[in-house]
Image 1 (cartoon, rainbow, N blue to C red):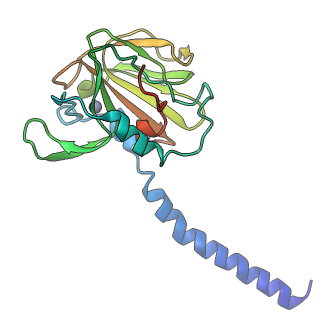
Image 2 (image 1 turned 90 degrees about the horizontal axis):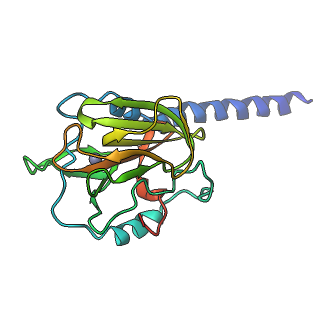
Image 3 (image 1 turned 135 degrees about the vertical axis):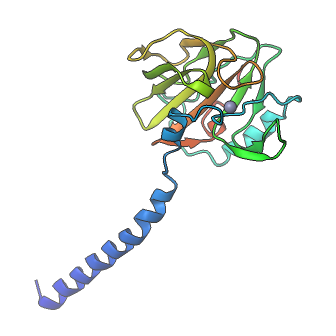
Length: 215
Ligand SMILES: [Zn+2]
């Protein structure tokens, strides 16, 4: 190899290294650990999880958000696309992913990193995808909570349950009943706080759940 060619290659490699040095920290900013924060909630300020009075037009909202959904194998059984609740006539999405008002102070409060699915007490809660139960515990403000690792970078979490029907280490199938809906933890009504994590970062569950809604 000629000396000048080698030089060019080395310079090219140097430029690549430089680019990755400046882009990697930028990319990793988004990967801060909401999962860690969520997994160990500070008692008293973990989640407001109030039930809002009016049912929201979630179908339109969902169609909007799914335009941004990553192109993924939605049919796969380890992909968390199955709604954790099959709504009765009383069921509705009581809170969406994003910033929201504190129901007590009516000021913009913390970021809500999941969606709240409200229905009757003891409504069955289903696993959104197959996986392994990594937590089945009382999480303080989040109440009785289940965390499932789907083995592909995705994890799902189900909070404020009335009872947990699986234990840590259990392997669950997609759609399996894993808990019943309750009001444990810091809540003002019966609902399931459902969260989806991709590589440790909470994402909007509506970007992965089936577009036809919770049945
Ligand atoms: Zn919630």
